[in-house]
Image: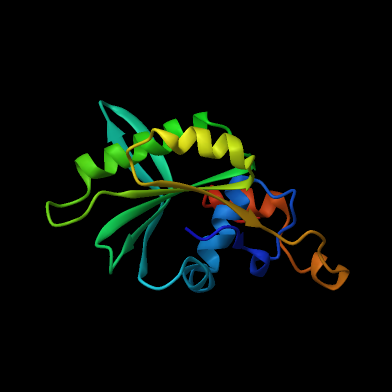
Length: 166
């Protein structure tokens, strides 16, 4: 897997929260697909998975045309923690059980974090049998002043996530 992913085209700074990153990635889905690489098709964001009557939401779901499998992407706005893999692993199992067909290969999981300790990530992945990867993403470190006023505020993004307008 590629590491790091460059998300500077989003125009977000390092302080961006997970939902803001997710929303902006979807708004720039063509550029995001190019960053991911050839063969990815966008399935959805905040994809609902019902497991035993409990609802869970996958941040981003893709299908890889050449690999013939679903790809679950989980976003974390902070540093990688081993427990993040438990959540991602759960989503892979749910997609394999509920979404994929017999012709599809096992679902792949990609955890995108703001940062990671490579040794901790290696230990967390070492005995895991599922196809999982951990990669960092890079946002703009500082936003040019000329662009700062043209970007939506966090309040505007939150309203849009809730389906309302400011």
